[in-house]
Image (cartoon, rainbow, N blue to C red; front, side, top):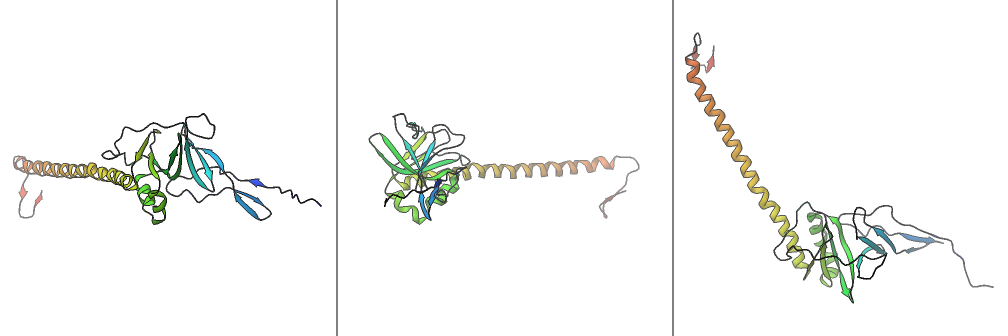
Length: 216
């Protein structure tokens, strides 16, 4: 009797890519005879060049190497934005990653895929992410595919919060300016009304009844 068993199965690959702050919820599976095994697979990020992800056990992995590979990205350029003093636009979608680099190969797990600054801060602050963020290198991939590398997770979080503070600083003067404009318009209208009263006195046949504050 043969001890070989033939099993027919099928692999599932997602038709879309999750974005935002929750990425590990989809696990493409191989199912056969009630046995489920997560399958590794590759996905190109829609609308982006040099941005393909490898899913292993349901987790998105971003790899870079100089060697040509249809399954890996080419090494990305370092951004000119300062990691200690710079900021990014609050509206810009960013990708936050944590991982390691060795022998010219970079392997990073994606923590936030094209999420907002607010989504990134919220996700990175979750307690279950502390260990992986503290024990690996952390970086941000910007919309132009450049990268900002950080010395530690605290530096990364400070960078994100600084971008939020910049937004508040920019919009506060705008709100003050709008208030001043409203006051100027109100005063101009008031002056126009005051200047109109003497003119009405000179109109023939027009009598002002001041005690009733009405014009007949």
